Structure formats: C-alpha cells, structure tokens
Length: 86
Image (cartoon, rainbow, N blue to C red; front, side, top):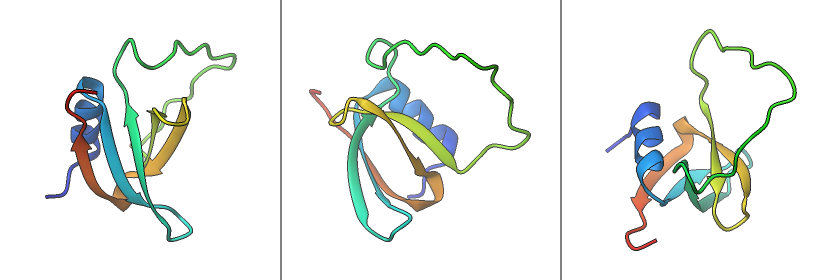
C-alpha cells in the first residue's frame, strides 16, 4: 500500500515510526523518526518562511537515532512501520 504525503505526516505526528526509503544514491535506509509534538525540539527560524506553491516531494522529519532533522523523498518510501512501545 502506498501512502500519500499527508498520510505519512499524520502517522508521524501520532507515532514513532521506522520509514524505509531509497536514498538518492540508491542505498536503502531505515530511519526511526517522528513528527510528534513534545518529541521534536522547538525550532526558531531566523529568516521568514516562503510558502511553496505546490507540495514538495521532500519531507523533513526528526530522526530519532541521529537526534537531528533529516529528510527523504516521499516518492522513494517503501514502507512506514509504527514502532509500538516506543
């Protein structure tokens, strides 16, 4: 089953997940990540945000093993697993 960008975002807002995707260099990566409020750190932007005219294929998430923001292309996602108990 292929998830849409919005479905992936909603899942990550409610759970810690492992997202399996293909990196630009062809390597497959499994990344534990989330968008849960209270887990991701507060972010202060020093420059104004420019709204995109169209949704982008790139999704930024909080990577749980690196404790840093990382991103992946939604079109490269192979699987999204919810990490129960995490």
